[in-house]
Length: 596
Ligand code: GTP
Ligand code: MG
Image (tube, rainbow, N blue to C red; front, side, top):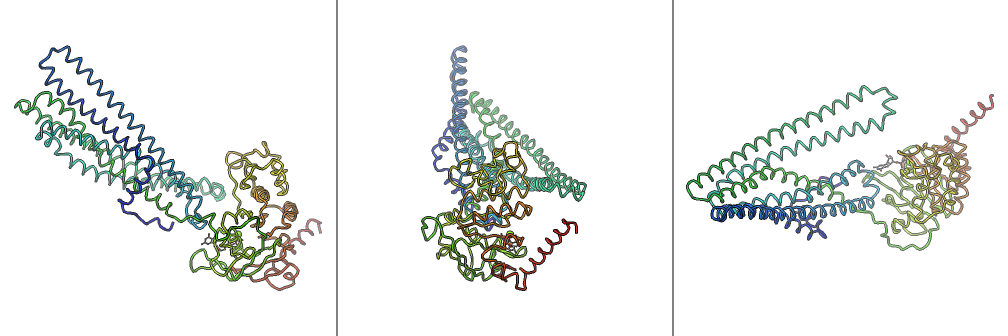
């Protein structure tokens, strides 16, 4: 990813997060207010306690006082409970709403990123950003900010109340608080670094496992189970060590700070008790103070943790921002507004292309295609055939020279329009884990009848195979359903493209995984379909390309030979060599079969 390392300053990220709240701000502020009310109710109960003891209990008759005390405590507990509940509800609504919005936004954005982005990005990494990073944002809003607010409010309200009761006592009681907060901040910063390493190791272990599972055939074929097991054990041990260190640190922190916090509380109790004896404060004040000090000291131990955790939320937010900052490729932008279908006349005029700047992969490509013609691309592996095809739907844009479609620059067409006009059967077609019917009708953009699907399947010579599946066209492809062979997948992909009925057909090695007989069957069907539409065929078999109107032989990104089969076969060059080789193999095969 180009700008992964780019970091926005924290203030800007915080502003971004605030921006993200739009639409939920009222709810969220409401949640904070509810939390504040709950905190006030809690503190009030201590003040009520003080009032009851000092003003009522010591003067009035006991029975009535106890009843009053009980009632007001119940009342305040109810109020506190209600506001805590309300705060929780509002917070959850906000956090869920924001993350839903964010996930949608990310998914939508990922859909619109360019081919070049996706060919560089790692799928696992992207998935992690849409899942765990979004979850981190959810925790940020749903737990950390509110909890931070709650701790600060509890501190603020209780401390103010203490100050009002007795300034000296209040100050004595919080001496340790700054120390506790600073220690806790640095401790959790350390913890979070360790935790990051732990997570990285966890990811490494998953990668080993995942590679082992997807490469299980290779592992077995090379009998490398022991090696793989050693590798896994090593990574697993390393994870164990990190996890243990992490727990060890935690095991120190909580008991130690518990002792420190409790010493502070005991000291506060002691000072308070002395003040009661000296008559500086009343018994009621003392009891109220005893309750409030708990709510000042204990939550403070978690302050550092919250700050550190909230900062991981900021890191996640940065990772999400980096994706959202990637430029989208516009589907609808274009300087022409094409009406109807294209005719399919293509002109390559000294066109060139580079994936990376300065490394041209296609050089000086020039040829001309009339509507309805069939162009065949032939050439060794890596010679640029797929790359050339990918220029047509504007998966990538050519970088030099010019390509025109129906006389108009290719770059002037909106991508969406081009992609609707162009059908492509990719070299390694991908099928979704959905039913075969859904896979075939994918991308047609309208309701298709059962008959149309069957017709396309028949044309792609896959209908009979589908019929043998337990649930026919409803059979689910992939993990939970049937496993299709490479050739079957290719034919489903051919059916899918045929049903789309595009004006320009791109077949990238579409019949490489099927036997010669099936290929002939598909080719017949394709021949019918190729009528009146411009077709590009990439193939390695001479039979697949010999009927083309124009054969282009590519080598290292250049056209080295061009012409029809009849001219090329009589010309010394790559084509003739391939032809000789394949013809000879076939002759030998025929002889073998005939038993000569
Ligand atoms: P086969 O499919 O194996 O027959 O080869 P091909 O003729 O289709 O070759 P292709 O067009 O896929 O690749 C041509 C050259 O471009 C090769 O040198 C590849 O390494 C390079 N290439 C292909 N795809 C990419 C890409 O996404 N990024 C970069 N940087 N290079 C690529
Ligand atoms: Mg290819």
